[in-house]
Length: 609
Image 1: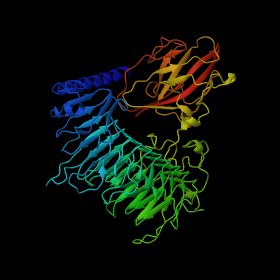
Image 2: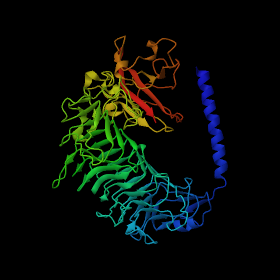
Image 3: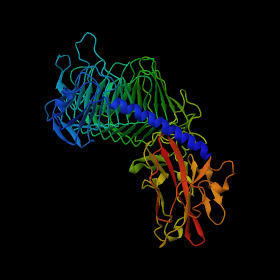
Image 4: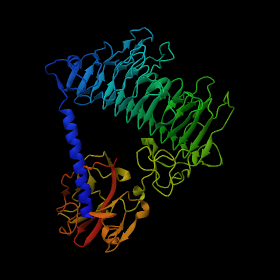
């Protein structure tokens, strides 16, 4: 087994060597322009570049209004809040209007204090794009595609009539934003006189449906406007959070999205709409079929709906809609889940309670008539004994503190749908695997079963005020869920701390299994050790040892097969090589608390994703 592992490792090393060599050869032809340097300003450095160059901007605040040159290049700062492009209230911080490909990457920069720019062609009213404006050279016979990628950028404290943080206009795309922050941007609360614009505080993203604009792992906070957060056309929004935004027509999102998987694993929390819904979604084609998956819509305030849907057929899968407050004005229909002119709404495995309004209100459809939503395996208040639903307290962990994970004993555990058109979806809002137990859970979070195991906290110090968490990874014991999540390629520091009630060092062994320990893995270990969250290696059949379970380190028998050498407590692992592929393991140790007294440590699930 070790020979096979060595062959695999040598293969990874060979591939890595080849990739490094290739990228080094490519990089050797690239000119690096450092700012400050030969060019004192960022714009001067941009103007001096050739295709494929790198502009490296050191930490500092640069009072400039930048225009990208008409060729691909990489622009890199020292990090958000360290390298700041300050628009000085004199226009957009950055303008892009030339044909670019996804080889143009802009990363690790902050764009602040921009005011947007007037459309030079006069076709669009108002100032557009406070922090960033991307357009397609309007007026050209064949507009160019503009497809830059933004990574780890901040757009903050900008103002404009529309798209205060950023504005994307015309036949552009796909433009991609990854791990970006849009915060404290202010747009008009009444949009300019054009149906093309949305008065969006964070970003106005309008691209043709073929190309679109993508947001991955972005955060939108405290933006304000006619639309508080994101307004646009042909957008894909995935793993994003919209928190504490303020809007008139929509608090968090007002968008027309493509069909299929365009809106999933998004958090909509604490937003306020003073004249509409928290989220308004529509499609360009009335016949489109759209899936919304694993989204959290909680603690929002709206005057019409929490979620409003327009046109198309909608499959809402594993949503959690709870703690929302509606403040109706005039004769406005109060509805938590509203729909206008839809062909149908189908809810699977969703929780829509408790809210301060009835769970679902189906409005009359002027085209297709009144069609109540179809429900399968949902927890919905106010609908009595409708087939496929329950009406019970979901038992969230701590909703008053904003934690809408499912607690032990929740009726939503293992009661999700057995079948969903288009599939259940492989990941929950935490990007954990779904399902984890015998069946999927209701709601956007799949519960971590290891947290329910009575053996998960271990027994170290249980007679002295414990149990104490002595096993950590990267300084964390995994919290209530006993889980530490890290990015693929990041290192791990594993530690056994000295128990607080024991004066001298303790001997210990750390066992591991591949995968996630769950409550049904509980096993009683002999020799007075008691319950552990999974069977340690010596208890498994020989053919399963090391292929399923392993010994991470063993201070009892330091010469026995183990992956890491150790000393007695306190012990911190040596810095091992970073793992370059997704992996989930569970760890739990046995510690000699006193001579002859062996007790299990706490459990940690370590997931690289």
